[in-house]
Length: 374
Ligand SMILES: [Fe+2]
Ligand SMILES: [Fe+2]
Image (cartoon, rainbow, N blue to C red; front, side):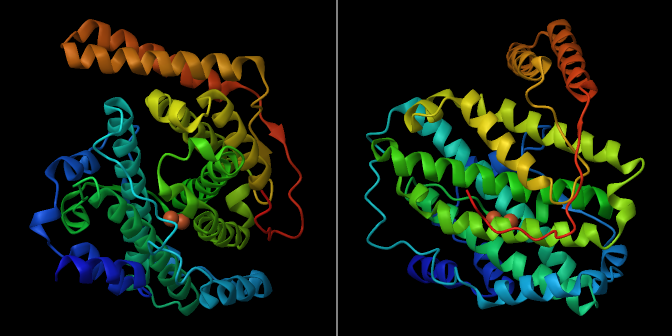
C-alpha cells in the first residue's frame, strides 16, 4: 500500500476491519522505531493494552436499558463524524523544524501517548466484537472500534508529518496485554472515555478563546472528536446500569480507587510536559482541576460517589505524588537504588493519602443518558 492510499484509507475508514488493515499496513519508510518503542513502554503512567473475560461481557443483557440503548446505537450508526478525520484546508502547515526543541519533544510524546491510548481502545473493542455472539454487544463494540481506529489513524497522520509513525500492527502483536475483569474494564474504560472527552473539550474551548496558542492544527479537530468519546462513555454507563451490583456495596470502593488512580495518573503525566502546556497557554494545575470537575460532574450519571477534589489534602498530595514521581525518574536514570526506593515509598504514601480522602455521596439520577454540554 502506498502512502497516499494509506492516508486516504485512514481517513475513510468506516469499519474496524478497514481501520486495522491500515494499522497493520507495514510501511517501512514511515515506521519509526523511536515512536513505536515509546508506545511499547508499560509503566504505571503509559497507556496499556487490555484483555478481559469476553464470554462474561458477551452475556450482558441490555433489555433493562433497551430504550436508551437503541437510541445511542442509532446515533452511533448514523455516524456524524464519518468525514471528520481527514485533513482539509483547515489543516495549516506545521513548521516542525522551527518548533522549539523541548516543545517538539513533549508534543511528540503527547501525540504518541494519545495514539497509543486511542489504539488501545480499538484493540480491546475489536477483540470483543470478534469473540462475541450477543448482537447488542458486538454491534456496540464494532462501532466503538471503528471510531478509535479513526482517532489513532488521524494522530498517526499528524505524526507522519514529523517523520514519525507508531507501528500499530507491531504494537497489536507485541505489546503486553493487561488482564482486567469485565467490571474493572467498565470502571477504567468508562472513566477514560469521559476524561478523554473532558480533556479534548477543555483544550478545544480554551483555544477557541485563545487562538494565538493553537500551535498545531490537530486541536481544531477536538470538538467533534470528543463527541465520539462522549458516546463511548455513555455506552459504558448503560452497560453498568444493567447490573446495580456494579455500582453498590464493595464496588463503591473499587470505583473510588479507579477515580483516584485515573485522576492521579493524568495529573502526574501532564506535569511531565511543562513546555507543551506553556505553548497552549494552559496552567496544568488549572487544566487538571477543570478536567476533574467536568469528569466528576459527568460521572454522577452512574457513580454513587464523587471524589472531593476541593479537599485541602487533594491538591497537596497530588503535588507530593508528582514530585515523588519526578524523583523516581531521576533516581532510575542515575542508577540510585536507595533514592529510588525512597521515592517509591513517598509516591505510595501520597496515593494512599489521596485514596483516604472521604468521598462525596451522590444520588444517581433515574435517567442515565447525557448529552455533551461543555
Ligand atoms: Fe478515541
Ligand atoms: Fe473512545
